[in-house]
Length: 415
Image (cartoon, rainbow, N blue to C red; front, side, top):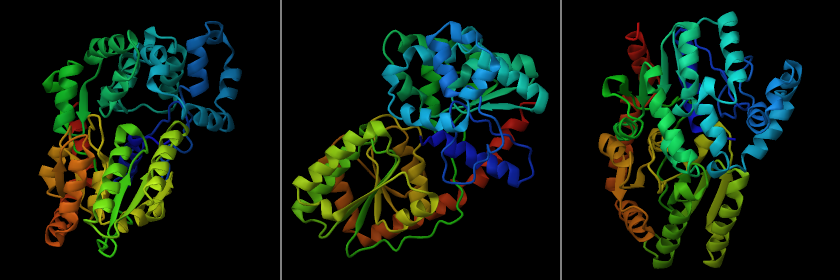
């Protein structure tokens, strides 16, 4: 499974280590799937996915010997679990999510105690950073056992929690609010998402910081912004929530009106087993329009292929339908000198206004999206200005060095 937070955390730990800091990345649930060197190599997996699931479903399993639990954490088993997990939706794991948020009061308390014991024996950190608020159940026990501050990064929790069934949805939000006091600092990747979580999770403003995500710029090269033909790109998980169907409809509209002659579509990013039927529907739609020959799909690609993918684009568009907390793909496009077209929703207006790297259009409308993309593609001067603005923004703000420096500055103030 591909995990945006994992990419962010791995890049951050890489930069911390490059600067000489002692940073440890601990994988939870499953082995990490990354497109850069895995900074968790050599560190055991805690809260192994199968153990977590069985502890939730069967009371007797919570008392099985450690040798059996360790066996279930074997990598070959974890890889198989990962393939199954890729078919799981939020509505299917409501009780498990709530139990994890309950931490020492949940069914996975044994896994939590194993993590605490390992940290006390092998690593005595100065601060513990949780990757997202779904892990907030660990905060109280980690803080008490290790005697250090706990920091919680924020990104995308709202969409996942809102996908849970009732009553677990409401109970999970309430449990997070109840545990906010166990965290010394929350860090959000945009002002938009800081506002969302301050309101929904009742996080005090003096415990909430905003630091933009940044990327490792190694290997990024500037696109020539191909003109004959131009290439429209989509790069993120291939799912309805990210608006791939809206983009496909906009592409078909642009080709049928011949406003941008010869326009091609390139689709890349994560594609989990649960996404495959949806992707098949989009391909069938393109075949019916006689355009499949001008479209490429590149799922689950490695870093080098991703860098080449961005270099071959003229414009990128991800018309996400839910409140995107940040959108790392926007920064990857900017680093490649590729302008972006995104809906007037969530963090998108903030990032586009901050960078000048693209244009905003109406949300959820393939017609509005097609018009915005077409307007930008036929205006080469504006296209070039957006490309330059994006490259400048990444060089000055949205890179991993700036992000790491901002994190270190905030962490140092925790004492």
